[in-house]
Length: 567
Image 1 (cartoon, rainbow, N blue to C red):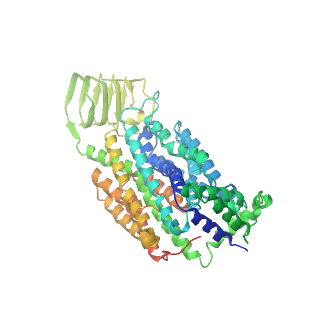
Image 2: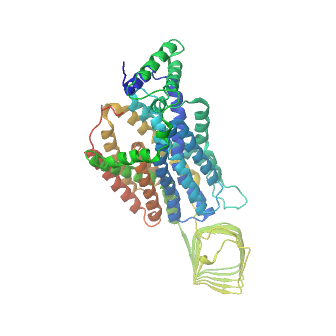
Image 3: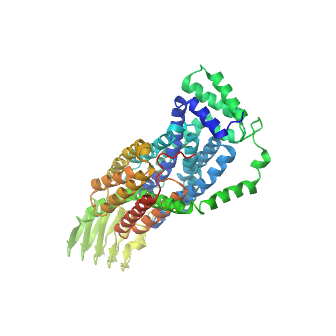
């Protein structure tokens, strides 16, 4: 008797049941999904600390945040094809290993270009973790509740955000000046963030089997039967395993869809690039032909809009909160006008002060930090700046006479229309000539982001619980609309706590649009935020809100697939 192979496989999987084996696989694959999420989220924390060391402008930071998505796009398109050739497990091990290598290497970069290259490589590696992990898990899960079980995997993306925020809070915050001889905390943070990826590789190598569905499709029915028997044994115990194994082997043996033998499918078929690439190309073109073309464009728009807003907001939110703190700091500037300081020493930090037409004569500035201390039309006579660091400090239309700058970071760009008479610069400190304010509390920034990330967990849980009841269309439509409203109101927010609460609202509703086209949205979202956040915060926020609204509108048009079995 001939047996339809999909039916035979689903029957065997249903008999094997859902239990211990799938739970183990759930957590192992969850680590792989965490690796994807952490790789994306970590740049939001790294860039707020690495910018001074690597001399990064907002535009460059946007490219660094976005480059991982370019790599993920390539990885998502590549690893899916590879997994159909060599198997889910092997592919996942390879792509996560590539990610681990490039992620580790990025902790030791010295230039922007090096960082860009390693982030791109890490993106290629981790780009396969989402599509391959979901396929891998789905092929071990009975179809009765496959959709809801796959939805629960999304929780690891939320955990990834919490993990990155918690590690960022524990490791990174420091307002100390950068020293070349120290291995910076943001570099340590990158190494720690590679832990989920490494654990996933180790556990896959040591404990997990290849997907039985892949083995069946490859003609390796004996191996597939062995794997399914192991699933049955772990879920039900040893009793009945032999009978289950014989029954499954017989069903596969008499299938009318595939020939099962020890050697698997024909090697020539697997190694013929034209035939396989032609099939993939034909499948791709088919997405843009009737009756699928409208649905394809609607889904692409929805995925793009969600990814653009979600990733742009999430990765740039540490920078956004930091700038709220800095703006609050600048609002309390103290001004000194037309005064004279003579025969004295300044040894305390000078912060948030403006000096207009002030004369300094026989004055020493020693062992201090100047933060937003600007001098306009002032005169310096016989003045010594000794062991002084600064940020946001400039000298406009100032005159210097017999002045010494020793062991400072006052670069040429700090002096605008200044005159120098017998003025000497010695031991000017290396580093970046761009200004990066230290007038913010890094620990508060990361704590508030951690709170926002924790707020995203309930959204994942609610989505998973409601998936089988109301269907993905309603969830997508409501989440996009609510996210758009939340982002719009961030524009009016000028306090850190309220900003964190609003980000939490976005986090709660924005999970679930993770596909290759979403990587493009993530890339463009980061580049846009990097380009405009320093100009006016309303530009990227209103743009993100608009794109979320577009995504919600697209979801409204999509057909409802609740209750439809997708194989």
